[in-house]
Length: 313
Image (tube, rainbow, N blue to C red; front, side, top):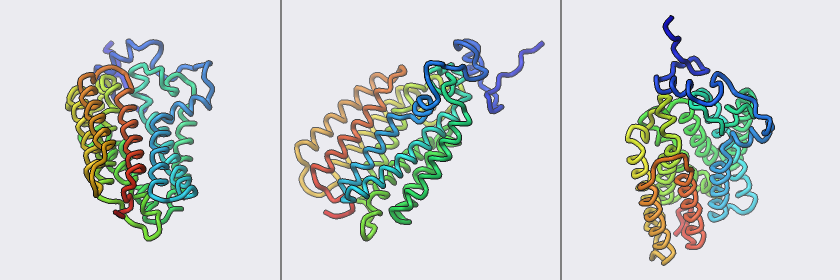
């Protein structure tokens, strides 16, 4: 008899490379395998992509404090961004379950059986439901900006990840984050152009950096976002240039003379970009973590320099 065509758990036919991956991955790939060493709570925590979720939340809170939102305002920003990030992370792992099974990603809690798919779905929807009132509590315009960014991230998970505009949701979500912060201030001021540009470029760069560790598995299961279409080395180079462009906008954009630590940040970002472009292969999360580190340094630069984050010079 002819061999049945391999399909993902959602019924989507897998590519030939993915079919081979199913046959060669350790253990059965038809469903999750229980992992007795990890409980459901720990599995749920791991499935939310805790490191990037925490990094983005802390960066948003620091940005809110630098903009003058005060402790209550910064806490509200952190709560809204945190729930949004949780919803996006859980949605991502749930949507990617079929691909992760096909490639034997036992490091994923859903694949190892540490947490059930229904629990991740419920957690994602619950976090999204909480994100809506928390975002709108800072004002209708501010909340709309943040929820638009969260919607863009969900659109990436559900559809745009597999298109040539896979970078766009990242650019929108990161680019709208400063607006969420500043529009919650009295008078609802928009952030300066250079801050929005820096955040959008950083977000797009984070997308390219985040794809690199899993690019081979993604290609095997038919994922064809922009980084996949230009290849690992091209993606590493473009990602580095985007992050460098973000640093340039942040250093050169604010009024006044560039301080020495601004030039230092620019030099360090350039060095990291060139080093990352030279080693684009492997499963290391270093490129993405380095991008988040640059984002943290950016926020520190904003606070130390005292530039007007709400259009005030």
